[in-house]
Length: 310
Image 1 (tube, rainbow, N blue to C red):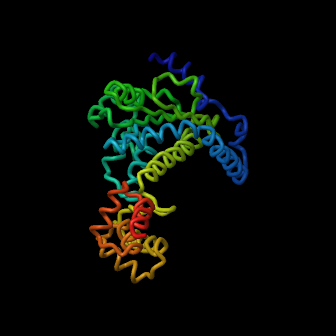
Image 2: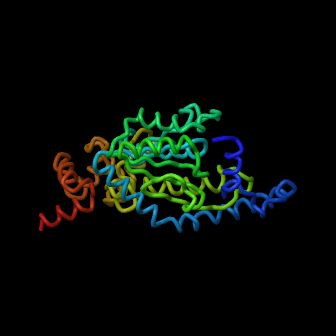
């Protein structure tokens, strides 16, 4: 794209407009600046709410992919790319999933997580090659994240994903009607001009982070990774998470700290099994089998056990 064409395109983007509320921000007092930023941030959740129908569609695609052995792959540049990598990194310790299941790719590679890699996002070829390196298949879902909706790296990734038959999602902060790439689901929280013109690390990134949290958390709930409202497949890779696991077992079963510790040890650190063992009296092997028979959902497993025990 020629420079003048790029300039003209950027000039039309909502994310590149000036916010009339912050025209005089450079001469405001500190508290006035903070209150203005906070006021604008408060609008984001309501705007995300308007995208719920599309978020639901995306979750259904992602959940179906996971159940079929597929992956969720985020693709982005700059702040958007960092958010995708962050969400992917947080899922294994939170939900006990394989790190391969949810991954993030970012223009410029992992070096771009710490410092800007100039020009890496400007070529569709880079996004296409990243998807090829990931060996994306029809089982996978590729989610492009681009506040502007025009990032070439993201477009290249999405086009390549569609070419191989993967499902595709886009999260952008410009109007749906202006989206110039075909995807299965478009999520478009239009949060309006930023307090600092074009600084999409602000409201746009807040909206994107909210949506990513919803996508993966809801998908994990639908995979049986949550019991009531507690994370029961967490990885105990530090002392805090070991103690949190014991607390979860105690709350789910109403047993003592000592008993919860014993059940957790007997279950080899598997919180789900420890809970089921405590509630049913079954041994580890039978508890795991019962969970397996009910797709890992504790409530379904418990109900089946109760019905059989009556």
